[in-house]
Image 1 (tube, rainbow, N blue to C red):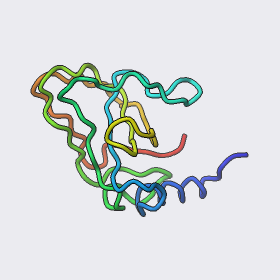
Image 2: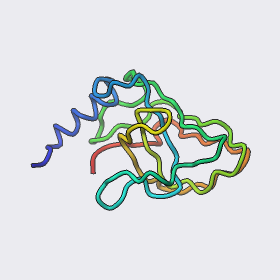
Image 3: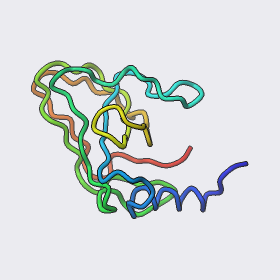
Image 4: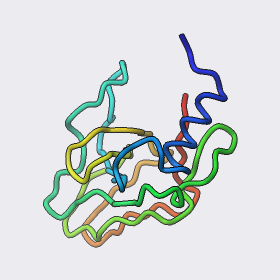
Length: 136
């Protein structure tokens, strides 16, 4: 059985713009240097940046960080900012949204349009409207 576009849009709305789908008070955005999931959509537990100075970026699950559903996806309304890299983090190719600061459940993920090498002194930031999440 498949979900309709309407069902997918409602799930996105509940998850991102109403803050009503997940129990967590925050989401955490993680950076990956390799694919986040395998060909079956199963999360791969390796590939997230592992440097000691890296941590996921926290965003509140309060319905304000992401846009209303538009054209079957949501985008970030605010800049998402990571701490300054104190070491080289590698080439970032993927991003994921988790329900915990460490470990936790991968909720949404995507491949960046352009991979980015993060070196010491860099600050990874995603300007408003630069991250888009939806259903394939």
